Length: 178
Image (cartoon, rainbow, N blue to C red; front, side, top):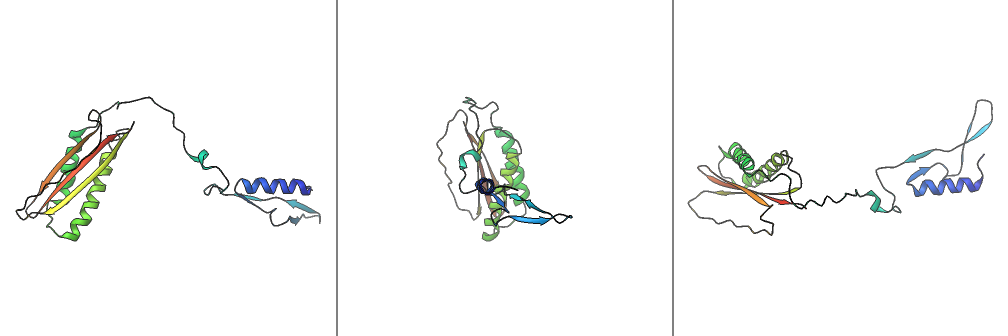
């Protein structure tokens, strides 16, 4: 049999570790086939939910410095321009301008573009995808953007699509993450 001190120590360690113990609700005894009683200790560990008392710093992944100040592979602007052209053409070729539909299409198209550019697996680049869709009624529009970046490593790709009733502008900004 376990002594009371050993039970308390075990229960304390299990609680600290984020486990639930049968010792916390006194001891659990079960009968063996010959009529003797035996102490039982059962634990359930919760790995998904860290304990409130644990230090969260050990849960973060520690990355070592690479001391790499520039990209090993530059961002392929020409390939991204082809992706923009294909996606905008496939999604908007037969569409007529409707405000609610275009609002949803901008979200959908930007997610598709982002997924296809991420599939290129260019390491250490952050992506920003912006899509604008508007009605073609003979008006003029100027869309501008400003970014703070390193012109040696950071770049963008852009494509303008037009059909009989709407226009679309898609921009992909890529910023190198040192």
